[in-house]
Image 1 (cartoon, rainbow, N blue to C red):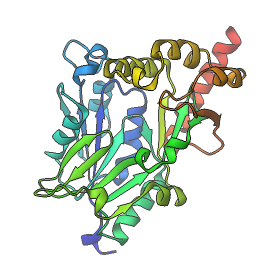
Image 2: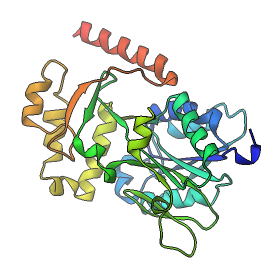
Image 3: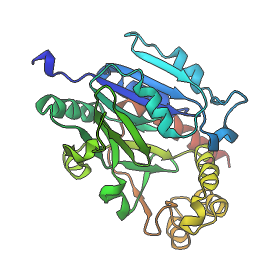
Image 4: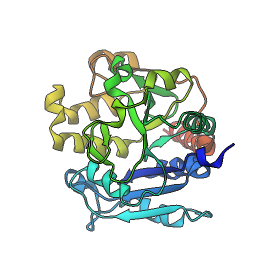
Length: 298
């Protein structure tokens, strides 16, 4: 293989209170990374969840600093931020690779899926952006929540961007990158879309609605952006009556009365019948064992 064609991928993670999943997110990408740039701290609307210094209070920073970075490729930048787009643009100041791959702190990949992306970039250096369609986990590791909207192009995960000096993100929802002296986005130049990557079996595993505290923080943040009103739901009621009360046994009843994903009335849960990323195996085993013991005690 021509080393000049080998992509140098700068993975970028923005995070506040990312435990426990950020550890596994890093493990999943570490061997493929040219560098991993982590931008940590609260945006203004999420200061309620931060410590007095605006930083994570769940052990995230301590984990990052103690991660066995044997290749010396990890960089941690801390602060407080106006918005998430500012966090991503701060990361771009440190990028030395030729591709930027955005990773949520609770988003984890299988090794062979990352390898497929690397091969795509090796094969065609004109690709400027790659999107994905993810699987989103619900109340543990045995169910995902789905909605037709997830398959619409507007909802695809914008993740991999060809990088040039002077590039900037112009938005976070969704991420849009432009190059210097142009308003054309990387998505408008040469995109590999989510339908294509899904057919290739490349799937981000998004452990986004798994833990109570994780979802509670999301709900409070959504309230501060006023999204509950735009969705037409009471987010506190949704958290108590839908998320907290949902079980595999009562899910049909719960889902008749509540939308599972707050952004869509057509959302619902279904069993997850695939395998999890390799790095998650041991954590999931301990998680399931703990919850089985807890249920037995009750």
